[in-house]
Amino acid sequence: MDPVTSTTPQARSAAAQSSEQQPGVDLGGGTNISSDFDTFLRMLTVQVQNQDPLNPVDATDYATQLATFSGVEQQVLTNDLLTGLQDLLGGGSLQQMGGFVGMEGLVNAPVRYDGTPIAVRPDYAPNADSAALLVRDEKGTLVQRFGLEVGEEAVLWTGLDETGTPVPAGTYTFQVESYEGSRLLNSQLVPAYSRIEEARRENGAIVLRMSDGTELPADEVGGLRSPAA
Image (cartoon, rainbow, N blue to C red):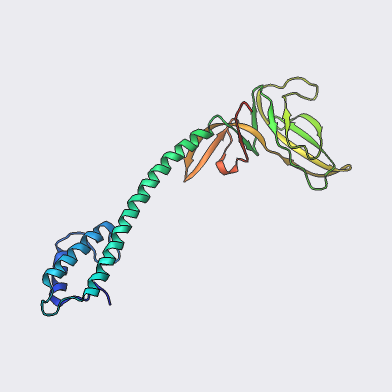
């Protein structure tokens, strides 16, 4: 039995009159929770004031209504708490973004070389028994190629070309060729550490701008390290 509708005709009439005096209050399912709570309290007061003394509302019905009101109040408090948490998380996001800037992120993207050696994390094809690292400039021209030990997890490129001459500052990409004997198994771009210049929130996600101008979501960064590492 609905606790609100189990009142006398006089109580229902008074409750309806009370709701009509409150503009913008909808007693259906589409009201704001906080205004519902105030409305429930007014309805309960009107119901008590207008019940038939010879046929009062059953105590069980009162208990049910009070439990309903208590639940609504708890929902209001929960919403306030969630709002506060949202504000805190918003501040946390700014701190998180600030933590990205200036770090080096491991990305599958071109890397800006400015004289500081670049750390590369090679990937190898299954069954490969030899491999080579290819370094290309921003025009795609091969700058240097040298052999790798399969399974070597980290390589430091010091910025030299095929003749051992330092290359100019610029943007470079890194590619690993995997071989089985003399057969090329595959050739793929591999991640390298690139400095993170900017972090911003865009469409609910954190977007990072790398040293070469490449922009990518933060979840595409495979690792972070201090520039001094």
